[in-house]
Length: 335
Image (cartoon, rainbow, N blue to C red; front, side):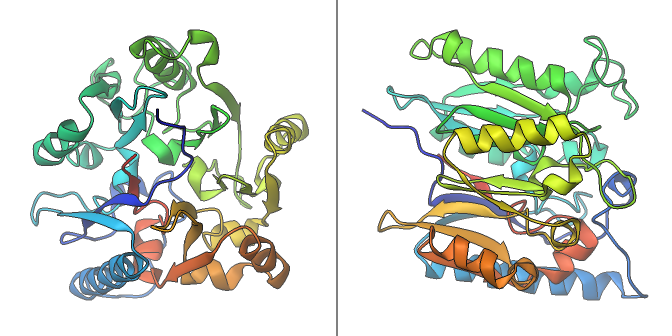
């Protein structure tokens, strides 16, 4: 009999052979910046070195890493962030595997759903929930109205949604890439797809709005919060509405999490973009970028270290700067 897990030691990564700053996505991803006149070649080469070093440090801790390569000339500069277009799930107690593919806002990001990766996933997860047609319901443009059942709807995987798998809660900061109706459809479909999970035990959806220091909507939930087995990291300061902020914090506390609250400045340094992983000995570790680790306070590091056997970090400066995503975004979990 399988038991529900919050984290896994099996991960999928995509090597960024065609990495560059994706201007198509810069309109709402304010974590992307373009400092100086660095050449595209130097950016790509630095991103590749960061990717290799990150993969190596994860592997050195015994994590099982499956690597695909992005295709040069395929125009998928954000392929290094595969967690946005698919997620995997295990039914309890049958251990049946489910994969979900998601509707993506950007045309370049839709090209990341490659047949070879889908085929690999299908061999491990025979049940496929495909939500990608939602991105085409109004002609496939990028300007659908949020909240309308017949409009374009985007839901960018575990970027848009942060799963508390143990307590069956999804936290989601509403944005152009995180549509509430699409999330509710996912919850219904997951429940109905399993004969072992009564609908009443489906995921609870907690939605809220968050913004950065300049009033821009946060594009992905996983840059401002993360949920592990015992610990949650959240930038509650970004949740402007007091009632919504209390709702999130209270639900995390009710589920027994120690909450590490980070500031807007720490969020900008990707402290919210962290991921819990399971090591071969069964212990839990927290993965983050070097930039994030340096931005945590000593007290926060002490709190995290009291719940994790290791804090694993790697330098991802180029990918964070030009891609607007960090350590968590680069890891798709294989449950």
